[in-house]
Length: 298
Image (cartoon, rainbow, N blue to C red; front, side):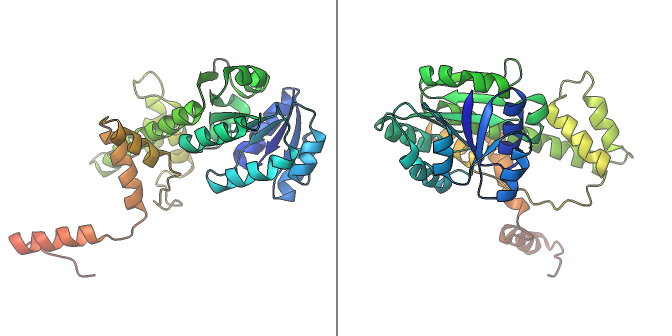
């Protein structure tokens, strides 16, 4: 199948390579000429503008976006307008807010252009093991694009999950769950590090991946990180969030669903970006005031 891939970062480049290996024809575009050249050497067809990509693709065209959520997606869709014809398909494989995806689908449908919102999970390992895909939109459009999904995903690794917005909603909650799982692992290993026993973190991570109830791919990645640097001395404890945890918590509030683990894991990420907090200063001052507990001068 022929498609255009817009955005050749770590995910987009890996997906392009997997598609090429599966026999698809991929026309690529990125703001970086070096990124284009990198996948062109793998067999992709280079385009030097979105208009150039549109000319190289045969109708009905399929444009797959792997770019940052928000304004970049709206801007790219707007720039594609001159190349679009009725029956064309735009796929957003980034981590967009599902509400934006619903809006974009409705707007494009009025122009007779189809839109699929596809949550993509797999990270940098997707090239070798496959990407997990959660697709929302028209079921007929999903069927049209299914040969692409079959190549990108491992066996049973893709699904049509509902109408417009459903794919990105599923990926949003998926990422929020990931927050909580990673937080539990992180807290457990810190307790082990603080214990009176000389635990070897790589050993325990490896051990728990063989038959234990907490074994997982994330724990395998934890093992790999510890094997490279058991004390993680080369890593600063700054943890970013890309929005899905916040959006999921808002959904939990809107539907009155308790989600304490996800909430806590998100707030810990906020805390990781502060070297000191006014909250901690107030707590220290109060302990000193009521109990005469010592304080440490700044």
